[in-house]
Length: 362
Ligand SMILES: *[C@@H]1O[C@H](CO)[C@@H](O)[C@H](O)[C@H]1NC(C)=O
Image (cartoon, rainbow, N blue to C red; front, side, top):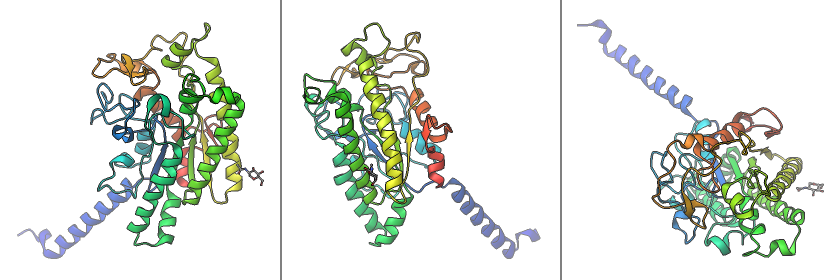
Protein backbone atom coordinates (compact mmCIF):
# COMPACT_ATOMS: atom_id res chain seq x y z
CA UNK A 1 0.00 0.00 0.00
CA UNK A 2 1.32 3.38 -0.89
CA UNK A 3 2.23 5.11 2.38
CA UNK A 4 1.52 8.50 0.86
CA UNK A 5 -2.17 7.74 0.95
CA UNK A 6 -2.37 7.51 4.75
CA UNK A 7 -5.49 9.24 6.08
CA UNK A 8 -3.41 12.06 7.59
CA UNK A 9 -1.87 12.85 4.20
CA UNK A 10 -5.31 12.82 2.59
CA UNK A 11 -6.45 15.42 5.11
CA UNK A 12 -3.41 17.54 4.26
CA UNK A 13 -4.15 17.23 0.54
CA UNK A 14 -7.77 18.19 1.02
CA UNK A 15 -6.83 21.21 3.17
CA UNK A 16 -4.36 22.31 0.50
CA UNK A 17 -6.99 21.93 -2.21
CA UNK A 18 -9.44 24.03 -0.20
CA UNK A 19 -6.80 26.69 0.38
CA UNK A 20 -5.91 26.80 -3.30
CA UNK A 21 -9.58 27.14 -4.20
CA UNK A 22 -9.91 29.98 -1.71
CA UNK A 23 -6.80 31.52 -3.24
CA UNK A 24 -8.36 31.29 -6.73
CA UNK A 25 -11.49 32.92 -5.42
CA UNK A 26 -9.49 35.75 -3.88
CA UNK A 27 -7.56 36.22 -7.13
CA UNK A 28 -10.79 36.22 -9.14
CA UNK A 29 -12.34 38.91 -6.98
CA UNK A 30 -13.27 42.16 -8.67
CA UNK A 31 -11.37 45.38 -7.87
CA UNK A 32 -14.54 46.94 -6.41
CA UNK A 33 -17.49 44.98 -4.99
CA UNK A 34 -20.12 46.75 -7.08
CA UNK A 35 -20.72 48.92 -10.16
CA UNK A 36 -23.87 50.94 -10.88
CA UNK A 37 -24.65 52.39 -14.30
CA UNK A 38 -26.79 55.49 -14.98
CA UNK A 39 -27.33 56.77 -18.49
CA UNK A 40 -28.83 56.44 -21.96
CA UNK A 41 -28.60 54.14 -24.98
CA UNK A 42 -24.79 54.14 -24.87
CA UNK A 43 -25.18 52.03 -21.71
CA UNK A 44 -28.71 50.50 -21.86
CA UNK A 45 -28.58 46.69 -21.87
CA UNK A 46 -32.26 45.81 -21.84
CA UNK A 47 -34.23 48.35 -19.80
CA UNK A 48 -36.07 49.75 -22.82
CA UNK A 49 -37.18 46.30 -24.02
CA UNK A 50 -40.25 46.60 -21.80
CA UNK A 51 -41.18 50.17 -22.72
CA UNK A 52 -43.46 51.59 -25.38
CA UNK A 53 -40.77 53.43 -27.30
CA UNK A 54 -39.11 53.68 -30.71
CA UNK A 55 -35.75 53.54 -28.86
CA UNK A 56 -35.77 49.77 -28.45
CA UNK A 57 -33.37 47.30 -30.10
CA UNK A 58 -34.27 43.80 -28.93
CA UNK A 59 -34.06 42.49 -32.50
CA UNK A 60 -31.37 41.46 -34.98
CA UNK A 61 -28.93 42.60 -36.22
CA UNK A 62 -28.34 44.22 -32.75
CA UNK A 63 -26.19 41.87 -30.71
CA UNK A 64 -24.87 40.19 -33.86
CA UNK A 65 -21.45 39.82 -32.20
CA UNK A 66 -22.76 39.29 -28.64
CA UNK A 67 -22.98 35.71 -27.29
CA UNK A 68 -26.62 36.09 -26.22
CA UNK A 69 -27.67 37.86 -29.43
CA UNK A 70 -30.03 40.85 -29.22
CA UNK A 71 -30.38 41.85 -25.55
CA UNK A 72 -31.37 45.50 -25.89
CA UNK A 73 -27.77 46.71 -26.21
CA UNK A 74 -27.61 49.47 -28.84
CA UNK A 75 -24.59 48.00 -30.64
CA UNK A 76 -23.34 44.82 -32.29
CA UNK A 77 -21.53 43.53 -29.18
CA UNK A 78 -20.48 44.79 -25.78
CA UNK A 79 -21.07 48.31 -24.45
CA UNK A 80 -18.51 50.64 -22.85
CA UNK A 81 -19.56 49.50 -19.37
CA UNK A 82 -19.46 45.80 -20.29
CA UNK A 83 -15.78 46.31 -21.13
CA UNK A 84 -15.07 48.31 -17.95
CA UNK A 85 -16.81 45.72 -15.78
CA UNK A 86 -14.67 43.02 -17.44
CA UNK A 87 -11.50 45.04 -16.73
CA UNK A 88 -12.53 45.41 -13.08
CA UNK A 89 -12.65 41.62 -12.83
CA UNK A 90 -16.39 41.00 -12.50
CA UNK A 91 -17.60 37.63 -13.77
CA UNK A 92 -20.95 38.97 -14.97
CA UNK A 93 -22.21 42.12 -16.63
CA UNK A 94 -24.50 44.30 -14.52
CA UNK A 95 -28.13 43.19 -14.86
CA UNK A 96 -30.62 45.71 -16.27
CA UNK A 97 -32.95 47.10 -13.60
CA UNK A 98 -35.94 45.88 -15.65
CA UNK A 99 -34.76 42.24 -15.36
CA UNK A 100 -33.93 41.98 -11.67
CA UNK A 101 -36.50 39.31 -10.78
CA UNK A 102 -34.65 36.92 -8.49
CA UNK A 103 -31.26 38.45 -9.34
CA UNK A 104 -28.79 39.70 -6.82
CA UNK A 105 -28.31 43.48 -6.76
CA UNK A 106 -25.38 43.53 -4.36
CA UNK A 107 -22.77 43.72 -7.18
CA UNK A 108 -24.52 46.46 -9.10
CA UNK A 109 -27.36 47.26 -11.47
CA UNK A 110 -27.68 48.96 -14.85
CA UNK A 111 -30.40 51.66 -14.85
CA UNK A 112 -29.58 53.18 -18.27
CA UNK A 113 -32.40 53.83 -20.71
CA UNK A 114 -32.26 54.63 -24.43
CA UNK A 115 -33.39 58.19 -25.36
CA UNK A 116 -33.31 59.27 -21.69
CA UNK A 117 -31.77 62.54 -20.63
CA UNK A 118 -30.88 64.72 -17.68
CA UNK A 119 -34.20 66.51 -18.23
CA UNK A 120 -37.38 64.52 -17.69
CA UNK A 121 -39.02 65.54 -20.98
CA UNK A 122 -36.02 64.63 -23.18
CA UNK A 123 -36.82 61.87 -25.69
CA UNK A 124 -40.50 61.69 -24.75
CA UNK A 125 -42.23 63.47 -27.63
CA UNK A 126 -40.31 61.92 -30.51
CA UNK A 127 -39.40 58.48 -29.09
CA UNK A 128 -41.88 57.59 -26.32
CA UNK A 129 -41.38 55.97 -22.92
CA UNK A 130 -37.93 56.10 -21.31
CA UNK A 131 -36.46 56.25 -17.83
CA UNK A 132 -35.08 59.75 -17.26
CA UNK A 133 -32.10 60.33 -14.95
CA UNK A 134 -34.33 61.51 -12.09
CA UNK A 135 -36.34 58.29 -12.17
CA UNK A 136 -33.18 56.16 -12.50
CA UNK A 137 -31.93 57.67 -9.24
CA UNK A 138 -34.98 58.64 -7.18
CA UNK A 139 -37.13 55.57 -7.88
CA UNK A 140 -35.01 52.74 -9.20
CA UNK A 141 -31.74 53.23 -7.34
CA UNK A 142 -33.67 54.11 -4.17
CA UNK A 143 -35.45 50.72 -4.40
CA UNK A 144 -32.15 48.90 -4.95
CA UNK A 145 -30.52 50.65 -1.99
CA UNK A 146 -33.34 49.47 0.31
CA UNK A 147 -33.00 45.95 -1.09
CA UNK A 148 -29.27 45.98 -0.36
CA UNK A 149 -29.91 47.26 3.18
CA UNK A 150 -32.37 44.39 3.69
CA UNK A 151 -29.86 41.87 2.35
CA UNK A 152 -27.38 43.22 4.90
CA UNK A 153 -29.74 42.25 7.72
CA UNK A 154 -31.17 45.77 7.88
CA UNK A 155 -27.85 47.05 9.17
CA UNK A 156 -27.62 50.62 7.78
CA UNK A 157 -23.94 50.96 8.73
CA UNK A 158 -22.99 47.80 6.81
CA UNK A 159 -25.06 48.90 3.82
CA UNK A 160 -23.49 52.37 3.87
CA UNK A 161 -20.02 50.84 4.00
CA UNK A 162 -20.80 48.58 1.03
CA UNK A 163 -22.36 51.38 -1.08
CA UNK A 164 -19.36 53.63 -0.50
CA UNK A 165 -17.05 51.06 -2.13
CA UNK A 166 -19.04 50.85 -5.38
CA UNK A 167 -18.29 52.74 -8.57
CA UNK A 168 -21.17 54.85 -9.90
CA UNK A 169 -20.81 55.36 -13.66
CA UNK A 170 -22.78 58.26 -15.09
CA UNK A 171 -22.97 58.86 -18.83
CA UNK A 172 -25.86 61.13 -19.78
CA UNK A 173 -26.63 64.32 -21.71
CA UNK A 174 -26.42 63.37 -25.42
CA UNK A 175 -30.20 63.10 -25.75
CA UNK A 176 -30.79 66.46 -24.09
CA UNK A 177 -29.17 67.86 -27.23
CA UNK A 178 -30.07 65.46 -30.03
CA UNK A 179 -33.53 64.45 -28.77
CA UNK A 180 -34.47 67.83 -27.31
CA UNK A 181 -32.53 71.07 -27.95
CA UNK A 182 -31.58 70.28 -31.57
CA UNK A 183 -35.04 68.94 -32.42
CA UNK A 184 -37.08 72.16 -32.60
CA UNK A 185 -39.92 70.39 -34.42
CA UNK A 186 -40.76 68.54 -31.18
CA UNK A 187 -39.20 70.61 -28.38
CA UNK A 188 -39.29 74.35 -27.73
CA UNK A 189 -36.13 74.58 -25.58
CA UNK A 190 -34.08 76.18 -28.38
CA UNK A 191 -36.73 78.90 -28.75
CA UNK A 192 -36.75 79.60 -25.02
CA UNK A 193 -33.02 79.35 -24.24
CA UNK A 194 -29.68 79.97 -25.89
CA UNK A 195 -27.37 76.96 -26.17
CA UNK A 196 -25.04 78.15 -23.35
CA UNK A 197 -28.02 78.82 -21.05
CA UNK A 198 -29.53 75.42 -21.87
CA UNK A 199 -26.15 73.83 -21.14
CA UNK A 200 -26.07 75.58 -17.75
CA UNK A 201 -29.53 74.18 -16.97
CA UNK A 202 -28.30 70.67 -17.79
CA UNK A 203 -25.20 71.03 -15.62
CA UNK A 204 -27.23 72.40 -12.69
CA UNK A 205 -29.69 69.50 -12.95
CA UNK A 206 -26.87 66.96 -13.17
CA UNK A 207 -25.19 68.57 -10.17
CA UNK A 208 -28.34 68.00 -8.11
CA UNK A 209 -28.64 64.42 -9.40
CA UNK A 210 -25.04 63.63 -8.43
CA UNK A 211 -25.66 65.13 -4.98
CA UNK A 212 -28.69 62.88 -4.51
CA UNK A 213 -26.60 59.87 -5.47
CA UNK A 214 -24.08 61.01 -2.87
CA UNK A 215 -26.88 61.22 -0.30
CA UNK A 216 -27.76 57.60 -1.21
CA UNK A 217 -24.23 56.63 -0.20
CA UNK A 218 -22.29 56.94 -3.47
CA UNK A 219 -18.66 58.02 -3.05
CA UNK A 220 -16.78 56.82 -6.14
CA UNK A 221 -18.10 58.49 -9.27
CA UNK A 222 -17.00 57.95 -12.87
CA UNK A 223 -18.63 60.78 -14.83
CA UNK A 224 -18.35 60.57 -18.62
CA UNK A 225 -18.33 63.44 -21.08
CA UNK A 226 -20.33 63.37 -24.30
CA UNK A 227 -18.92 61.80 -27.45
CA UNK A 228 -18.85 63.75 -30.74
CA UNK A 229 -22.61 63.61 -31.24
CA UNK A 230 -22.40 65.99 -34.20
CA UNK A 231 -20.46 63.44 -36.27
CA UNK A 232 -22.99 60.61 -36.33
CA UNK A 233 -24.41 59.60 -39.72
CA UNK A 234 -27.85 60.58 -38.39
CA UNK A 235 -26.79 64.08 -37.29
CA UNK A 236 -24.99 64.61 -40.60
CA UNK A 237 -28.01 63.55 -42.68
CA UNK A 238 -30.61 65.41 -40.58
CA UNK A 239 -28.74 68.71 -40.08
CA UNK A 240 -26.29 68.86 -42.97
CA UNK A 241 -22.69 69.96 -42.48
CA UNK A 242 -21.95 72.83 -44.90
CA UNK A 243 -19.15 70.79 -46.39
CA UNK A 244 -17.56 69.96 -43.03
CA UNK A 245 -17.28 66.36 -41.79
CA UNK A 246 -19.54 66.98 -38.76
CA UNK A 247 -22.43 69.19 -37.61
CA UNK A 248 -20.44 71.93 -35.93
CA UNK A 249 -23.21 73.48 -33.80
CA UNK A 250 -23.91 70.10 -32.17
CA UNK A 251 -20.24 69.34 -31.48
CA UNK A 252 -19.83 72.85 -30.10
CA UNK A 253 -22.68 72.22 -27.65
CA UNK A 254 -21.21 68.86 -26.61
CA UNK A 255 -17.82 70.53 -26.17
CA UNK A 256 -19.25 73.25 -23.93
CA UNK A 257 -21.18 70.66 -21.91
CA UNK A 258 -17.98 68.66 -21.39
CA UNK A 259 -16.02 71.74 -20.34
CA UNK A 260 -18.65 72.64 -17.74
CA UNK A 261 -19.03 69.03 -16.64
CA UNK A 262 -15.32 68.76 -15.93
CA UNK A 263 -15.56 71.94 -13.86
CA UNK A 264 -18.57 70.55 -11.99
CA UNK A 265 -16.69 67.35 -11.15
CA UNK A 266 -13.82 69.45 -9.85
CA UNK A 267 -16.18 71.53 -7.65
CA UNK A 268 -18.11 68.56 -6.31
CA UNK A 269 -14.84 66.87 -5.37
CA UNK A 270 -14.03 69.92 -3.31
CA UNK A 271 -17.52 70.43 -1.84
CA UNK A 272 -18.66 66.91 -1.04
CA UNK A 273 -16.41 65.59 1.66
CA UNK A 274 -15.27 62.04 0.93
CA UNK A 275 -16.52 62.07 -2.67
CA UNK A 276 -14.01 60.71 -5.17
CA UNK A 277 -15.23 61.88 -8.50
CA UNK A 278 -13.47 61.70 -11.84
CA UNK A 279 -14.26 63.03 -15.29
CA UNK A 280 -13.68 60.74 -18.28
CA UNK A 281 -13.34 62.39 -21.65
CA UNK A 282 -14.27 60.05 -24.51
CA UNK A 283 -11.41 59.95 -27.00
CA UNK A 284 -12.05 61.78 -30.26
CA UNK A 285 -12.90 59.72 -33.29
CA UNK A 286 -9.93 57.56 -34.23
CA UNK A 287 -9.34 59.20 -37.59
CA UNK A 288 -10.48 62.21 -39.51
CA UNK A 289 -13.99 61.32 -40.63
CA UNK A 290 -13.50 63.07 -43.95
CA UNK A 291 -10.82 60.59 -44.95
CA UNK A 292 -12.26 57.58 -43.13
CA UNK A 293 -13.71 55.15 -45.62
CA UNK A 294 -16.34 53.71 -43.30
CA UNK A 295 -17.85 56.78 -41.64
CA UNK A 296 -21.29 55.51 -42.59
CA UNK A 297 -23.34 53.04 -40.53
CA UNK A 298 -22.52 49.33 -40.58
CA UNK A 299 -26.19 48.34 -40.59
CA UNK A 300 -28.99 49.51 -42.84
CA UNK A 301 -30.65 52.38 -40.98
CA UNK A 302 -34.34 53.31 -40.90
CA UNK A 303 -35.61 51.63 -37.72
CA UNK A 304 -36.64 53.46 -34.52
CA UNK A 305 -37.04 57.15 -35.34
CA UNK A 306 -34.98 56.62 -38.53
CA UNK A 307 -31.58 56.32 -36.83
CA UNK A 308 -31.61 52.65 -35.76
CA UNK A 309 -30.97 49.46 -37.77
CA UNK A 310 -33.89 48.05 -39.74
CA UNK A 311 -35.19 44.90 -38.07
CA UNK A 312 -33.61 41.72 -39.52
CA UNK A 313 -31.54 43.67 -42.05
CA UNK A 314 -28.07 42.35 -42.93
CA UNK A 315 -25.23 44.41 -41.45
CA UNK A 316 -21.83 45.02 -43.05
CA UNK A 317 -19.53 42.00 -43.05
CA UNK A 318 -16.65 43.60 -41.04
CA UNK A 319 -18.17 45.78 -38.29
CA UNK A 320 -14.73 46.13 -36.66
CA UNK A 321 -13.77 48.34 -39.62
CA UNK A 322 -16.63 50.74 -38.92
CA UNK A 323 -16.98 53.49 -36.32
CA UNK A 324 -20.76 53.59 -36.40
CA UNK A 325 -22.93 50.55 -35.94
CA UNK A 326 -26.21 52.34 -36.69
CA UNK A 327 -27.09 56.00 -37.31
CA UNK A 328 -25.99 57.16 -33.83
CA UNK A 329 -24.28 54.33 -31.92
CA UNK A 330 -20.75 53.03 -32.21
CA UNK A 331 -19.58 49.52 -32.95
CA UNK A 332 -18.26 47.35 -30.14
CA UNK A 333 -14.73 48.01 -31.42
CA UNK A 334 -15.04 51.74 -30.70
CA UNK A 335 -16.89 51.27 -27.41
CA UNK A 336 -13.84 49.25 -26.41
CA UNK A 337 -11.58 52.21 -27.26
CA UNK A 338 -13.67 54.48 -24.99
CA UNK A 339 -13.66 51.88 -22.20
CA UNK A 340 -9.90 51.31 -22.36
CA UNK A 341 -9.27 55.04 -22.23
CA UNK A 342 -11.56 55.47 -19.20
CA UNK A 343 -10.02 52.51 -17.41
CA UNK A 344 -6.33 53.11 -17.91
CA UNK A 345 -5.54 56.41 -19.61
CA UNK A 346 -3.02 58.48 -17.63
CA UNK A 347 -3.37 61.91 -19.25
CA UNK A 348 -5.57 64.65 -17.73
CA UNK A 349 -6.97 65.18 -21.23
CA UNK A 350 -8.81 61.86 -20.98
CA UNK A 351 -9.16 61.19 -17.23
CA UNK A 352 -9.24 64.04 -14.71
CA UNK A 353 -8.09 63.73 -12.00
CA UNK A 354 -7.69 59.93 -12.38
CA UNK A 355 -8.74 56.88 -14.40
CA UNK A 356 -11.16 54.16 -13.28
CA UNK A 357 -8.36 51.75 -12.36
CA UNK A 358 -7.14 54.33 -9.85
CA UNK A 359 -10.67 55.22 -8.71
CA UNK A 360 -11.21 51.55 -7.85
CA UNK A 361 -8.14 51.56 -5.58
CA UNK A 362 -8.95 54.77 -3.68
C1 LIG B 1 -19.16 74.49 -4.08
O1 LIG B 1 -19.01 75.36 -3.00
C2 LIG B 1 -18.85 76.72 -3.37
C3 LIG B 1 -18.53 77.50 -2.10
O2 LIG B 1 -19.48 77.24 -1.11
C4 LIG B 1 -20.10 77.20 -4.08
O3 LIG B 1 -19.95 78.55 -4.48
C5 LIG B 1 -20.36 76.34 -5.30
O4 LIG B 1 -21.59 76.68 -5.91
C6 LIG B 1 -20.39 74.85 -4.91
N1 LIG B 1 -20.45 74.08 -6.13
C7 LIG B 1 -21.16 72.98 -6.26
C8 LIG B 1 -21.17 72.36 -7.61
O5 LIG B 1 -21.76 72.46 -5.36
